[in-house]
Length: 386
Image 1 (cartoon, helix red, strand yellow):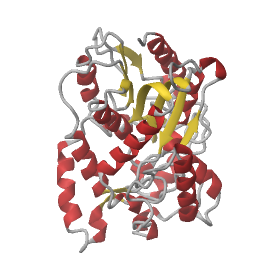
Image 2 (cartoon, rainbow, N blue to C red; image 1 turned 180 degrees about the horizontal axis):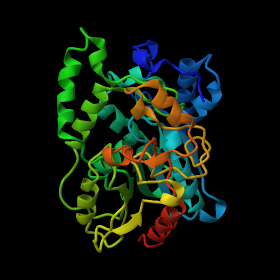
Image 3 (cartoon, rainbow, N blue to C red; image 1 turned 90 degrees about the horizontal axis):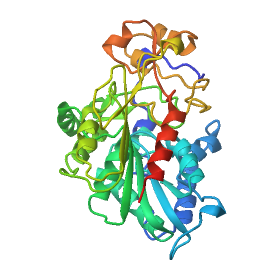
Image 4 (cartoon, rainbow, N blue to C red; image 1 turned 90 degrees about the vertical axis):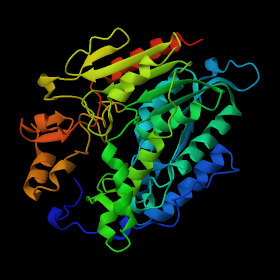
């Protein structure tokens, strides 16, 4: 576990200011390989001198992979199918690594982008716009289009929303894979821009929360501008029917987004190839939804969580035996609860809800205990693709 910060006295530090290197997309005109190299150099500059700096860079950098030779069957390009992976808000490409391995094994050319403002320090989200994220995704799509006949987009949370937004106007996109999609967030998020407006006078008001930021692959501190940009993005999403294949995995217990919007989305898909996995403690009783019971009391898991869907239990950082424990909900209470949660071998896991907290010490679940089953469902979905 990282060296302990006094949680009762976390103040704004240099990481809560923009680095000046990562608030806008800077990959235009580059090949994807050049974009990776340029981004890695930027990440090394920001993280220089930190313990495990190269590990931090590797986890936050964009990446790519190619399928085995047997899959290289295309009409005019090197590969038949390709997928662009887009991570979520405050996350990094690390969160898409397990999905990348899955798609590579299933014959996809894989590319994963780093969204502007991410991977460096939380302050880089203070000035970013969602349009900058969309620009990064569009760049990745164009790079993929140069190598594959069929383009698919796969996104987690904000990455799913960005993928959905792009697919609505790009006829080259053949299908979507969406995980914990951030299609709707709380209405009160629109007021975040007001606090942002007077943060020049009271800098702390620019932040929804200020955290220790111990996670190598995800910001723990969260600024108001990030909330504002997500609200703007969700209000730019298309309405109406979808006529391409769509795969969705979402949790009813999601405390980050309004997951019912994902149920609405799958109902709007008019293509015969569609699939939804709904992680919940009760069956929604819908023919177009496959229920996955998210309560596993024998593993001390009370429910799924927004953070859990795309991570395998085998993940060395977030997984069942991983080194990171998400106990951030205790930071505002007292240091004793936080330390106990971090070190406990018997803490419950699940989404941070009032009901779940009643059980005692609770960690936010960071992995999907049904990940292997999700991959099987995705494989069946891919077999049905036209």
